[in-house]
Amino acid sequence: MVSAGIGTANAAESVNPEEELLPSSIGENVLDRMLKQQEKDFESKNPLRNKEITKLTETDETVLFYRAMTEVDNRPLLDFNYEVSDVKVYKNKENQLFVEAYVVRKFQYFEDGTETGFGDFIKLQINKSSKKMAQETAKISSSPIESDSVDNAPVSNIEKEVQLLSISSEKDSEISADEFLENYKKEKNKEPESVTPEQTEEGQQSALKTSSVQKAVYSAAASYTYNRSKSVYYATTHALNPNTRYPYFASAGDCTNFVLQSLHAGDIPMMGDWFMRKGSDGVWKYGYSWIHADEFRKYLLQTGGILMKTMPNTYSNAQLGDIYHYDARNKFGLPITDGVMEHAAIVTKKTSGQVLVSYHTTNRLNVPQEYYSAQEGGVRYLSHIY
Image (cartoon, rainbow, N blue to C red):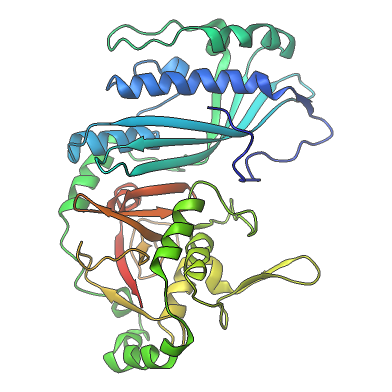
């Protein structure tokens, strides 16, 4: 389904003077055909059957997730739907044709109706003139979608000319599908961490001593009452639909910004270095702990701030509105844990024995807590918010 817009306001870069905008219907028809075929191929249990049309690869996140759910968790796909917004079609001075858009794909694997969502900014290049595209794209949207589970769907001339240039979930160093599945299995069977990240960092052990934690509880308890329902409602509303009342850090990473927006929506007030607000000059001003995962966790450990305690990562301990911190790499970018957090996510659903989280960069709704770890490695810590 092509929608008028879902409020991302970041799907496409502004067109420069050397680019000529074209009717968005050209891109909408191409995207609609591509996603309709994805829907049929996922439903036929063979998401890579028509790769020339769907542009899917074995390491596309939706394909990895499909395999994790069906092959490891033994959950059949119950439903699939999609939305396309912020479509921009343009050509450059070399007459190369491009399509940019924000695409949301939602999957239902849980019988209680819980949806898992993937929101991605994508960019396509079409190796055909805009005049020919305008003439032929109408044929694409009206052509039949192949639903048979064996035979391949017919590929139109236009679809042969469409190339996927980028998708926001694309990783610099992708692991193979088999590596991902093996990692996912290990993460599912991993024992809860017995040591906190602070105990691996020199000079921070005292932050987790009982007296320090209790002092933080007493000093900040009167300042707020955490409303988990409001926080989770905000997170599930804006996981795939970023709130345009806040800035969105597409390049630097928006995970911490999103998680803290959710905590703030749950009646936790901004305080100290933990703030995000627009100044009188119209420029956004924010504390370092609002936008960096590790600084956020360090702030949680400070006396008088938000109340947090690292808990053993079990299903019973995780509560809606709690936070997961992920330590996947060291300061040199190598896959070695060093007690410094690179990612944060918020617990938004518990169902069928699984803890599901939502996060940004990339935009994800209700994915298993193990999913990010299976891709990036490292360890994760359950941060219980009081």
